[in-house]
Length: 528
Image (cartoon, rainbow, N blue to C red):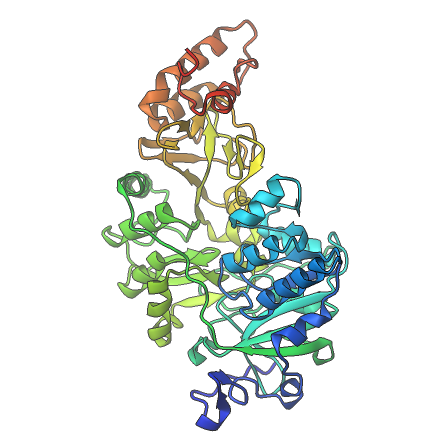
């Protein structure tokens, strides 16, 4: 397929009120479909399943989704119980999630969210939420698990003469949305640098069983697709123009806890290199979740002996840009950018440099189990808590209330060469222990979790039986304020007749959590 690039600079005549028409929308049939956001959302009806672009704030439609929220709010104020089912790549901008949730406009949400208003409605039972592995989304939508996709709203950076779409700062599930939706609304964002064209690798070779074939991606730098999205012009019902930056992901400087966790991870890498299990200079491709701990680990790599590293992950954070700039990282593959305001500015100002070191792919490829296993990914993800046997809860506070979602952590944990979970040893000013006797919700089983890290230390549980594993996790990762009680729990569980391979005191397995619910702390003695 032909994949054109954008013109380097639109003429003054092409620019009206900060929005570029002819320079970004270079196909006449699409130009004839330009409308306002308010007109575009009239194509969305109550009960529709709406799929929108966006992944970790990047690439979320800037005009159409606020207009949709207002459209829903007015309809509901008039007595119409207007709701939609909302499908996305992962999280979207907090403004988008909040506006739609505040309007009570979402009946069902899938596959990931990260906004307090939506989270509250989910936990109150006012919004259905399906939390799934991100690599599964495209297949499940193709199979019709969520019914028919009525409307797709997708942000792009331009439209070529031949009518193909130049992607924005995230790819996510946009290929799937454009393939399956009955009606398509495009939002063309001229804020995105022209030089962004060519950063993307859109693969069209996936298929459903029994027609699947191997995905020939054997190196992080491999390109196996094309630079643009294909779209059926007949299904495009509206084109909306905008010139607005992505929402920035807030980022704070690494604190002492994050730096301690990062130090343990880097020491572990050195140990694995010495043992011959990792290449000395380049390690293996890295994957890291979003957040300050992940950024602290990435920052620590700059001062280490590693050069020419590669990354195969879901998002690129500020720390990754720094590693690329200083030569620590040679190449990074992801599906989206997740940058702070400073990171966005750095990326835009130096796009000609970064486009030679970054590729953005559909999330069914960035998270694909086949590729994760083949490349030998080192997976580093956050957690809410782990139990003494290595089961990890990533999603549910006290086992019942959703926080965000599993996202892509399971895709990388189950299939990676190394699977690591990172967390401070306590939360809520020390009231909550992240190491507990038994997690009340399991996202990642003990069979998939190899390394647990807190600021207290690192527990390498590979090759350890459950009884040995529990002692290592407690001694290396638990906070000293909870360590004695956890050891006492294991001692008494192992002393029971018929204790079994994985000893537990069933009447006390969730005692930390029940104590917190009664007293506001997991600390022993709070009820005395």
